[in-house]
Length: 140
Image 1 (cartoon, rainbow, N blue to C red):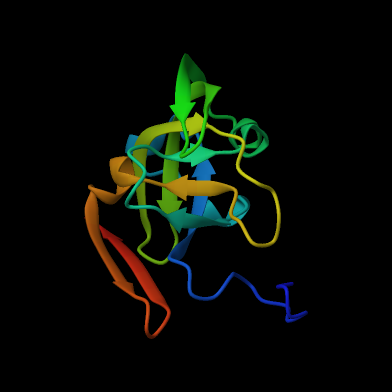
Image 2: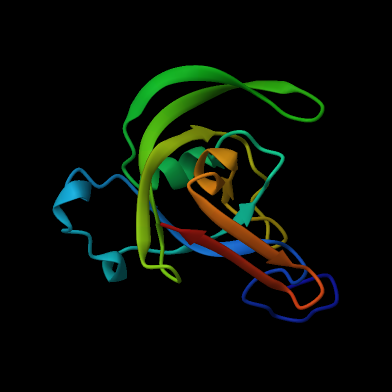
């Protein structure tokens, strides 16, 4: 529900895509069954170098930790964990293997639990039409 009391599937006017976050050890064997996992709306952030998610979302996706890091935000830095993950984009029916870092993203209807940054966006082509509220990430 937004500030005006209107219930929406996602916040309008924001570049978001549907994505399934998980760790898929059989990624190269084509054994992925996306219907058995929860999809999230992820903010496409061309200003973010990496992909980010809440610790709860990353742990729920069973993504293994491969290190630690410090995440810099616009006003502060926080300790972070570095994980290996797979992002499946249902609209494109494409899954990529990438890294994701934990970050204390705000957990509210106005924000997403994941940020897809340039680490993933550079794997494809991003189309953002703010006027028509259309956002597409094409991966190949």
